[in-house]
Image (cartoon, rainbow, N blue to C red):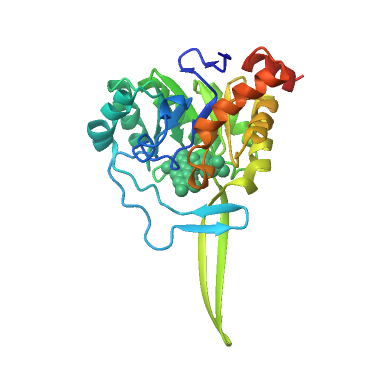
Length: 304
Ligand SMILES: Cc1cc2nc3c(=O)[nH]c(=O)nc-3n(C[C@H](O)[C@H](O)[C@H](O)COP(=O)(O)O)c2cc1C
Protein backbone atom coordinates (compact mmCIF):
# COMPACT_ATOMS: atom_id res chain seq x y z
CA UNK A 1 0.00 0.00 0.00
CA UNK A 2 1.48 3.32 -1.10
CA UNK A 3 0.88 6.25 1.25
CA UNK A 4 -1.16 8.83 -0.70
CA UNK A 5 -2.41 10.62 2.38
CA UNK A 6 -2.66 14.36 2.89
CA UNK A 7 -2.83 15.43 6.53
CA UNK A 8 -4.09 18.98 6.98
CA UNK A 9 -4.02 18.62 10.77
CA UNK A 10 -7.72 19.28 11.30
CA UNK A 11 -8.72 17.22 8.27
CA UNK A 12 -7.27 14.04 6.84
CA UNK A 13 -7.44 12.68 3.28
CA UNK A 14 -6.54 9.09 2.35
CA UNK A 15 -5.60 10.43 -1.07
CA UNK A 16 -5.35 13.89 -2.69
CA UNK A 17 -8.16 13.50 -5.24
CA UNK A 18 -11.45 15.29 -4.49
CA UNK A 19 -14.52 15.95 -6.61
CA UNK A 20 -15.46 19.60 -7.16
CA UNK A 21 -18.63 21.31 -5.99
CA UNK A 22 -21.50 21.25 -8.47
CA UNK A 23 -20.13 18.36 -10.48
CA UNK A 24 -20.84 15.44 -8.14
CA UNK A 25 -24.18 16.42 -6.58
CA UNK A 26 -24.50 15.01 -3.07
CA UNK A 27 -22.92 11.78 -4.31
CA UNK A 28 -26.37 10.08 -4.77
CA UNK A 29 -25.91 9.54 -8.47
CA UNK A 30 -22.52 7.86 -8.17
CA UNK A 31 -22.32 5.51 -5.21
CA UNK A 32 -24.42 2.75 -6.82
CA UNK A 33 -21.85 2.44 -9.61
CA UNK A 34 -18.51 3.34 -8.06
CA UNK A 35 -16.65 2.71 -4.83
CA UNK A 36 -16.81 6.35 -3.83
CA UNK A 37 -14.91 5.60 -0.60
CA UNK A 38 -11.81 5.53 -2.81
CA UNK A 39 -12.20 9.26 -3.45
CA UNK A 40 -10.17 11.51 -1.10
CA UNK A 41 -13.27 13.62 -0.38
CA UNK A 42 -16.44 14.71 -2.11
CA UNK A 43 -17.30 18.41 -2.13
CA UNK A 44 -21.08 18.82 -2.12
CA UNK A 45 -23.08 21.01 -4.48
CA UNK A 46 -23.13 24.58 -3.10
CA UNK A 47 -25.73 24.88 -0.32
CA UNK A 48 -27.54 28.08 0.62
CA UNK A 49 -29.77 28.82 3.62
CA UNK A 50 -32.96 28.46 1.61
CA UNK A 51 -33.67 26.12 -1.30
CA UNK A 52 -32.94 27.75 -4.70
CA UNK A 53 -34.46 26.78 -8.06
CA UNK A 54 -31.49 28.19 -9.99
CA UNK A 55 -31.62 30.13 -13.24
CA UNK A 56 -34.23 29.75 -15.95
CA UNK A 57 -33.33 29.23 -19.60
CA UNK A 58 -30.25 27.66 -21.11
CA UNK A 59 -27.84 26.77 -18.30
CA UNK A 60 -25.02 25.00 -20.09
CA UNK A 61 -23.04 25.91 -23.20
CA UNK A 62 -20.28 23.67 -24.52
CA UNK A 63 -17.18 25.29 -25.97
CA UNK A 64 -14.44 23.53 -27.94
CA UNK A 65 -12.45 22.75 -24.80
CA UNK A 66 -14.66 23.71 -21.90
CA UNK A 67 -18.12 24.33 -20.52
CA UNK A 68 -19.96 27.53 -19.63
CA UNK A 69 -22.55 27.18 -16.89
CA UNK A 70 -25.12 29.51 -15.38
CA UNK A 71 -26.84 27.06 -13.05
CA UNK A 72 -27.50 29.82 -10.51
CA UNK A 73 -26.79 27.73 -7.41
CA UNK A 74 -29.80 25.45 -7.63
CA UNK A 75 -29.82 23.48 -4.39
CA UNK A 76 -32.05 21.95 -1.72
CA UNK A 77 -31.16 24.36 1.11
CA UNK A 78 -29.25 23.62 4.32
CA UNK A 79 -32.08 22.12 6.40
CA UNK A 80 -33.01 19.62 3.66
CA UNK A 81 -29.34 18.81 3.27
CA UNK A 82 -29.05 18.10 7.00
CA UNK A 83 -32.30 16.09 7.11
CA UNK A 84 -32.01 14.15 3.86
CA UNK A 85 -28.38 13.97 2.74
CA UNK A 86 -26.06 14.24 5.70
CA UNK A 87 -26.94 10.93 7.38
CA UNK A 88 -26.60 9.15 4.04
CA UNK A 89 -23.15 10.62 3.37
CA UNK A 90 -22.09 9.56 6.87
CA UNK A 91 -23.52 6.05 6.39
CA UNK A 92 -21.63 5.66 3.13
CA UNK A 93 -18.45 6.22 5.10
CA UNK A 94 -17.04 8.77 2.69
CA UNK A 95 -15.06 11.86 3.46
CA UNK A 96 -17.01 14.95 2.45
CA UNK A 97 -16.76 18.73 2.50
CA UNK A 98 -19.84 20.95 2.59
CA UNK A 99 -19.71 23.79 0.05
CA UNK A 100 -21.68 26.84 1.23
CA UNK A 101 -22.78 30.08 -0.45
CA UNK A 102 -24.84 33.09 0.60
CA UNK A 103 -26.11 36.48 -0.50
CA UNK A 104 -25.26 38.33 2.70
CA UNK A 105 -22.71 37.96 5.47
CA UNK A 106 -25.55 36.84 7.78
CA UNK A 107 -26.36 33.97 5.41
CA UNK A 108 -22.79 32.71 5.63
CA UNK A 109 -22.66 33.14 9.41
CA UNK A 110 -25.83 31.10 9.85
CA UNK A 111 -24.52 28.40 7.53
CA UNK A 112 -21.29 28.31 9.55
CA UNK A 113 -23.29 27.95 12.80
CA UNK A 114 -25.33 25.08 11.37
CA UNK A 115 -22.14 23.39 10.09
CA UNK A 116 -20.67 23.68 13.59
CA UNK A 117 -23.87 22.36 15.21
CA UNK A 118 -23.96 19.37 12.85
CA UNK A 119 -20.25 18.66 13.41
CA UNK A 120 -19.45 18.85 9.72
CA UNK A 121 -15.70 18.21 9.56
CA UNK A 122 -14.86 20.59 6.70
CA UNK A 123 -16.57 23.40 4.79
CA UNK A 124 -15.59 25.09 1.54
CA UNK A 125 -16.88 28.65 1.21
CA UNK A 126 -17.85 29.86 -2.25
CA UNK A 127 -17.22 33.62 -2.11
CA UNK A 128 -18.20 34.37 -5.71
CA UNK A 129 -21.58 35.69 -4.60
CA UNK A 130 -22.86 39.29 -4.57
CA UNK A 131 -22.61 41.09 -1.25
CA UNK A 132 -25.88 42.96 -1.29
CA UNK A 133 -25.48 44.76 2.04
CA UNK A 134 -21.90 45.98 1.69
CA UNK A 135 -22.51 46.78 -1.96
CA UNK A 136 -19.62 44.64 -3.14
CA UNK A 137 -19.76 43.11 -6.58
CA UNK A 138 -18.74 39.83 -4.98
CA UNK A 139 -17.25 38.98 -1.57
CA UNK A 140 -14.39 37.25 -3.32
CA UNK A 141 -13.22 40.26 -5.32
CA UNK A 142 -12.71 42.76 -2.49
CA UNK A 143 -10.08 42.00 0.13
CA UNK A 144 -11.78 43.99 2.90
CA UNK A 145 -15.18 42.31 2.31
CA UNK A 146 -13.45 38.94 2.15
CA UNK A 147 -11.49 39.50 5.36
CA UNK A 148 -14.65 40.52 7.26
CA UNK A 149 -16.63 37.59 5.89
CA UNK A 150 -13.99 34.95 6.66
CA UNK A 151 -13.39 36.38 10.15
CA UNK A 152 -17.09 36.11 10.98
CA UNK A 153 -17.30 32.54 9.65
CA UNK A 154 -14.16 31.62 11.60
CA UNK A 155 -15.74 32.83 14.85
CA UNK A 156 -18.62 30.39 14.43
CA UNK A 157 -17.02 27.40 12.76
CA UNK A 158 -14.13 25.50 14.35
CA UNK A 159 -13.71 22.71 11.78
CA UNK A 160 -11.48 22.75 8.68
CA UNK A 161 -12.27 26.01 6.88
CA UNK A 162 -11.52 26.23 3.14
CA UNK A 163 -12.10 29.44 1.19
CA UNK A 164 -12.62 28.95 -2.56
CA UNK A 165 -11.23 31.86 -4.53
CA UNK A 166 -12.47 33.23 -7.81
CA UNK A 167 -9.95 33.87 -10.62
CA UNK A 168 -11.93 36.91 -11.80
CA UNK A 169 -9.68 39.39 -10.00
CA UNK A 170 -6.52 41.37 -10.73
CA UNK A 171 -4.56 40.61 -7.54
CA UNK A 172 -5.26 37.12 -6.27
CA UNK A 173 -2.33 37.62 -3.85
CA UNK A 174 -4.21 40.28 -1.83
CA UNK A 175 -7.25 38.04 -1.52
CA UNK A 176 -5.18 35.03 -0.46
CA UNK A 177 -3.55 37.13 2.27
CA UNK A 178 -6.93 38.42 3.44
CA UNK A 179 -8.11 34.82 3.80
CA UNK A 180 -4.98 33.86 5.72
CA UNK A 181 -5.17 36.87 8.04
CA UNK A 182 -8.82 36.13 8.80
CA UNK A 183 -7.86 32.69 10.14
CA UNK A 184 -8.94 30.22 7.44
CA UNK A 185 -7.19 26.83 7.26
CA UNK A 186 -6.93 26.35 3.50
CA UNK A 187 -7.58 27.93 0.09
CA UNK A 188 -9.10 26.18 -2.90
CA UNK A 189 -8.54 27.70 -6.32
CA UNK A 190 -10.08 28.23 -8.75
CA UNK A 191 -13.78 28.74 -9.27
CA UNK A 192 -14.99 29.30 -12.84
CA UNK A 193 -13.67 32.02 -15.18
CA UNK A 194 -16.20 34.55 -16.50
CA UNK A 195 -17.08 33.65 -20.10
CA UNK A 196 -19.60 34.11 -22.88
CA UNK A 197 -20.92 31.56 -25.33
CA UNK A 198 -22.41 32.82 -28.60
CA UNK A 199 -24.58 30.56 -30.73
CA UNK A 200 -25.66 31.76 -34.19
CA UNK A 201 -28.27 30.10 -36.37
CA UNK A 202 -28.83 31.50 -39.86
CA UNK A 203 -31.91 31.17 -41.99
CA UNK A 204 -30.90 33.08 -45.13
CA UNK A 205 -30.18 36.61 -43.92
CA UNK A 206 -32.07 36.11 -40.65
CA UNK A 207 -29.92 35.35 -37.59
CA UNK A 208 -31.16 33.75 -34.40
CA UNK A 209 -28.69 34.50 -31.60
CA UNK A 210 -28.28 32.85 -28.24
CA UNK A 211 -25.85 34.35 -25.74
CA UNK A 212 -24.93 32.41 -22.61
CA UNK A 213 -22.97 34.37 -20.02
CA UNK A 214 -21.62 32.29 -17.17
CA UNK A 215 -18.65 30.52 -15.64
CA UNK A 216 -16.17 28.77 -17.88
CA UNK A 217 -14.66 25.50 -16.66
CA UNK A 218 -12.87 22.47 -18.07
CA UNK A 219 -9.60 21.86 -19.89
CA UNK A 220 -9.25 25.38 -21.31
CA UNK A 221 -8.94 27.00 -17.86
CA UNK A 222 -6.07 24.82 -16.56
CA UNK A 223 -3.29 27.36 -17.34
CA UNK A 224 -5.25 30.09 -15.51
CA UNK A 225 -5.73 27.80 -12.52
CA UNK A 226 -2.06 26.76 -12.42
CA UNK A 227 -0.98 30.38 -12.50
CA UNK A 228 -3.39 31.32 -9.68
CA UNK A 229 -2.25 28.43 -7.46
CA UNK A 230 1.40 29.37 -7.99
CA UNK A 231 0.75 33.04 -7.21
CA UNK A 232 -1.21 32.17 -4.05
CA UNK A 233 1.57 29.87 -2.83
CA UNK A 234 4.16 32.59 -3.42
CA UNK A 235 2.53 34.85 -0.81
CA UNK A 236 0.36 32.77 1.49
CA UNK A 237 1.41 30.23 4.05
CA UNK A 238 -1.74 28.12 3.77
CA UNK A 239 -2.26 24.76 2.07
CA UNK A 240 -3.92 25.03 -1.34
CA UNK A 241 -6.31 22.64 -3.07
CA UNK A 242 -5.95 23.16 -6.82
CA UNK A 243 -8.64 22.77 -9.43
CA UNK A 244 -9.51 23.89 -12.92
CA UNK A 245 -9.35 21.72 -16.01
CA UNK A 246 -7.83 18.62 -14.46
CA UNK A 247 -8.56 15.54 -16.56
CA UNK A 248 -5.61 13.16 -16.12
CA UNK A 249 -2.61 12.16 -14.00
CA UNK A 250 -0.26 14.62 -15.65
CA UNK A 251 -2.60 17.56 -14.97
CA UNK A 252 -2.64 16.56 -11.31
CA UNK A 253 1.16 16.41 -11.17
CA UNK A 254 1.33 19.93 -12.65
CA UNK A 255 -0.81 21.23 -9.77
CA UNK A 256 1.42 19.45 -7.20
CA UNK A 257 4.44 21.08 -8.87
CA UNK A 258 3.10 24.60 -8.29
CA UNK A 259 2.31 23.81 -4.66
CA UNK A 260 -1.16 22.25 -4.45
CA UNK A 261 -1.48 19.67 -1.67
CA UNK A 262 -4.61 18.11 -3.14
CA UNK A 263 -6.73 18.60 -6.25
CA UNK A 264 -10.38 18.55 -7.29
CA UNK A 265 -11.91 17.17 -10.46
CA UNK A 266 -14.86 19.15 -11.81
CA UNK A 267 -16.10 19.25 -15.39
CA UNK A 268 -14.26 16.05 -16.31
CA UNK A 269 -16.70 14.11 -14.08
CA UNK A 270 -19.43 14.75 -16.67
CA UNK A 271 -17.62 12.84 -19.43
CA UNK A 272 -15.71 10.42 -17.24
CA UNK A 273 -17.61 9.81 -13.97
CA UNK A 274 -15.09 7.25 -12.66
CA UNK A 275 -12.07 9.53 -13.12
CA UNK A 276 -11.62 10.39 -9.43
CA UNK A 277 -11.66 6.71 -8.40
CA UNK A 278 -9.32 5.72 -11.25
CA UNK A 279 -6.85 8.57 -10.70
CA UNK A 280 -6.12 7.44 -7.13
CA UNK A 281 -5.13 4.01 -8.48
CA UNK A 282 -3.12 5.54 -11.33
CA UNK A 283 -1.25 7.81 -8.93
CA UNK A 284 -0.27 4.88 -6.68
CA UNK A 285 0.93 2.88 -9.71
CA UNK A 286 2.92 5.84 -11.01
CA UNK A 287 4.64 6.32 -7.65
CA UNK A 288 5.70 2.64 -7.58
CA UNK A 289 6.78 2.59 -11.25
CA UNK A 290 8.96 5.68 -10.88
CA UNK A 291 10.47 4.55 -7.59
CA UNK A 292 9.16 7.28 -5.27
CA UNK A 293 8.55 6.26 -1.65
CA UNK A 294 5.14 7.89 -1.31
CA UNK A 295 3.12 10.95 -2.32
CA UNK A 296 5.14 13.26 -0.07
CA UNK A 297 8.37 12.15 -1.77
CA UNK A 298 6.86 12.71 -5.25
CA UNK A 299 5.74 16.24 -4.26
CA UNK A 300 9.19 17.06 -2.86
CA UNK A 301 10.87 16.08 -6.11
CA UNK A 302 8.33 17.98 -8.23
CA UNK A 303 8.96 21.17 -6.23
CA UNK A 304 12.78 21.08 -6.23
C1 LIG B 1 -22.18 22.71 -13.62
C2 LIG B 1 -21.25 23.32 -12.60
C3 LIG B 1 -21.76 23.68 -11.35
C4 LIG B 1 -20.92 24.25 -10.39
N1 LIG B 1 -21.44 24.57 -9.15
C5 LIG B 1 -20.61 25.07 -8.19
C6 LIG B 1 -21.11 25.36 -6.87
O1 LIG B 1 -22.27 25.14 -6.56
N2 LIG B 1 -20.23 25.89 -5.96
C7 LIG B 1 -18.90 26.11 -6.27
O2 LIG B 1 -18.14 26.57 -5.40
N3 LIG B 1 -18.42 25.82 -7.50
C8 LIG B 1 -19.23 25.32 -8.46
N4 LIG B 1 -18.73 25.02 -9.71
C9 LIG B 1 -17.30 25.28 -9.99
C10 LIG B 1 -16.45 24.01 -9.87
O3 LIG B 1 -16.53 23.46 -8.57
C11 LIG B 1 -14.98 24.28 -10.24
O4 LIG B 1 -14.47 25.28 -9.38
C12 LIG B 1 -14.80 24.77 -11.67
O5 LIG B 1 -15.69 24.09 -12.53
C13 LIG B 1 -13.36 24.56 -12.17
O6 LIG B 1 -12.98 23.21 -12.17
P1 LIG B 1 -13.08 22.26 -13.48
O7 LIG B 1 -12.44 22.99 -14.62
O8 LIG B 1 -12.37 20.99 -13.10
O9 LIG B 1 -14.53 22.04 -13.72
C14 LIG B 1 -19.54 24.45 -10.68
C15 LIG B 1 -19.05 24.08 -11.94
C16 LIG B 1 -19.88 23.51 -12.89
C17 LIG B 1 -19.29 23.11 -14.22
